[in-house]
Length: 567
Image: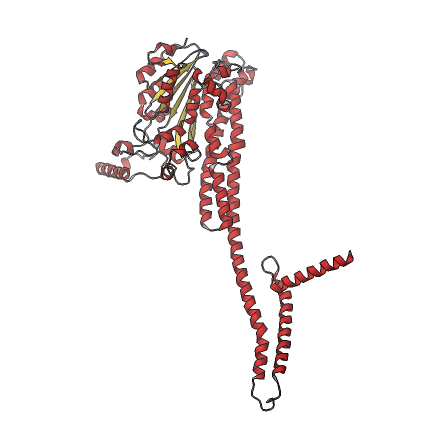
């Protein structure tokens, strides 16, 4: 029997009405938390629990591997009592407990409330917030005038949320004898989501995709995932909007649907109500809860469910597919547009856009490398656990001595935290391969294409300038040839117009025109010979003279005629 069923806040999650109510609550922005506990036959759910209800839930006795429990929390800084109850029960370290419930910044306490909230992944602070911080710093300076500077302890102007906002690839991995905890940044791409784009106007979409400089476009949210040794999975998500929960605007609710897409997909997998939907779309089917209609042929048991739930909350493959995996992802499309623009009109400003995409892709690459690092650390910690099921002597302590007795092995293994089931371990290995094969390789391909486009743009600009110089050269040579062509005729005309007594009445008009034709012909032949020589000397790739073209055409016709005769 599921222990949560004895609490009045919990209802049957397999009931259609209860499921619809819980699903709507999970999709709303004013919901603080929810809890789902399930086994092979039953599932119970509740939402918006207070700290007293959470403590009562944690005190219930549960047999090992009898059920799985999912505790989800949004905006932990607004539910510090709930986080404290979980941390105390599972013996979180004081540092981890403080970081989980830490505030975003002191700005939210100093600045007055504003009617419009901001998405956290913004690059600039509002003027009102900036002025509030400046006034607060001035008051602190006045209060501290009497304190010598040497006696003031050095203060590090850094908080957890400021760190994860500036370093998007930051990640955290913690172990204890009761839990395995990971923390990481997730990125939701609103531009790649068709449902979200259909709800936005052009101005709204441009506002929603405002992002920190040199960071990928999208909404960044920090996530904590904790796998406990009693079959409980805790997920804690950063509030993507400043201010208290609730009061969602028309633009924020569609954005929240994109951010919670994977969570809601996992949510629907735990109820029998959606068994028919899972059959119609097998790619969204997740093997978490056994004995469901779509999972009856699976080998999973309720003992595997917590590890599988932990894995599927981490594996947000839809976001990865939208960001970099599919062929029409945003960076591939942007690079293709830039390539077309380069062939149409190569410009130097295009290089700046390429460098911007390169910085964003570099950040995205480091984020996926952090995911791969988390998986590697998880799998490395699981090796001693799985090896203990075979030969206990394979587990060695820090001094390299074999641990022979079974009690020693068990004691040593417990220090590694909550173990993953073999089904989840295989899926983590598969996810690592997918990250390397699809995400990281695609990002690297985009980076290589970016570098090639930079060189292509410079080459096209150089080619364009060379063509302009070539046209100018042709015009100059044409004018020079015309000048040279008529220069002998001008000299001849000047000679005939000279008033000399010995030449008077010596030349006639016929003589003049005969001389004109002869000199013009000789000049043309001379220019033709010069054109042949200049065409050979200057080379054909850039410039090819008109006379050289005519000579080559005549030579080609002569060769073709000769070949016909030979046949």
